[in-house]
Amino acid sequence: MSEMYTERLLDHYLHPRNRGSLPRHLDEGGSVFVAEEYNPLCGDRVRIEFRVQNGQVAEAYFDGRGCAVCLGAASILTEVIHGKSLDELRSLGRSEFLAELQSSIRPARLKCALLPWIAFRRAAYGEDQSGEE
Image (cartoon, rainbow, N blue to C red; front, side, top):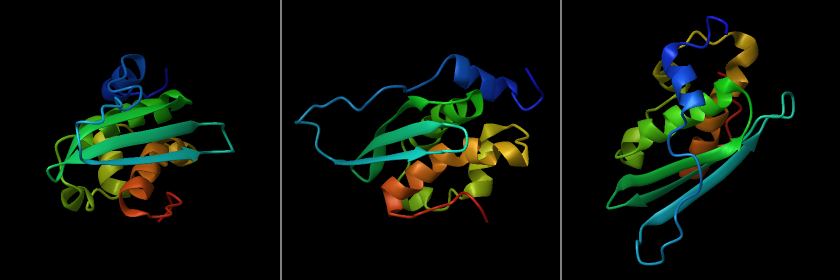
C-alpha cells in the first residue's frame, strides 16, 4: 500500500463502519436524507443515508463500490456526522473533511476522497458540490 493509506483510512476501508442502509422502521420518526454520487472517471459510486431526529444525526450509513480512498472516507464520514446537528455540520467544509481522513491525499485522488462528503452536502443542504475550491 502507498503512503496515502494511513492507518485510519485503511482501517475504515478494511473494517467499514455503518455500511448498509438505514433500517426501515416506521415508528422511529425524524427526517431521512439520502444522496448518491458517482465519479465517471474512476467508477466510484457512493450513497450516504442518514436520519435526523431531535435535531441531531441519529443514524448514518453508506454503501457503494469504489477504491479504498472513497470507501474508507465514506466510513469515516458516517462516524464524523453521527450525533451532530445539521447546523454544526454546515461548517464541515472540504478542508475539514479531508483533515478527518488523516491522510495525505494526492490531487488525482481528491475526487475519490471527497465523493462521500459531496453526497452528504447534497443530501443535507441541497448543494451541488464539485469537490473543487
